Length: 194
Picture: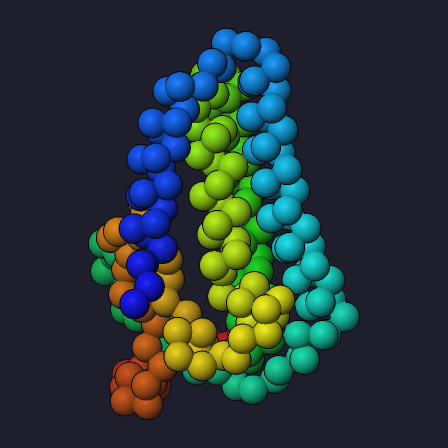
C-alpha cells in the first residue's frame, strides 16, 4: 500500500520547515546555494515539460485520435450544469500539458514575489522539492516519459488535483456511459474540443 501524494507532501513540508529553521539564510553563500537548488529544480521541471511539448509537436504522442467523451463537473460553488466534453486523447493530453505550463509559471511567479519582494527564503527550500516531486508524479510524465499504460488511475479523463495539498478537490470527471447519455439527452454541453 502506497502513501498518498498529499500525505508525503505534508510530511516533506513539515520536515523541511524544521530543517529550514536550522539553516542560516543570513549567510549569502547559503542563500545562493538554496537559490541554486530552487533554480535547478525548476530547470528539471521545465526540461521535462519542454520534452513533452516537443513530443506533442512532432506527434510522437502517437497522435492518439481516439474519441474521449466525459462529463466535466461544474466548478465548485457554481450554479452551472456539468457539461459534456467530446475530444480526442491527443487533444486532452495537450490541454493537460498547457495546464502544467500554467502551474509552473504560477509557482515561479508566486515564489518570485515571496522571495524577491517579501524577502522570505524558507519557502525556496520547500519549493525546490514539492513541485519536482509533483512533476514526476504527473500523469503525462508517467505515460509518455516512463511508458506506463493508460489504465487504472492513468485512464483518461484524470481526476483533477485538489486545492491546497489535495484537499477540497472538486468532483472528478465522469466518463461512464450513463452520465454521458444523461448529459447528451439533457442538452448539457456538447462542447467539442479540437
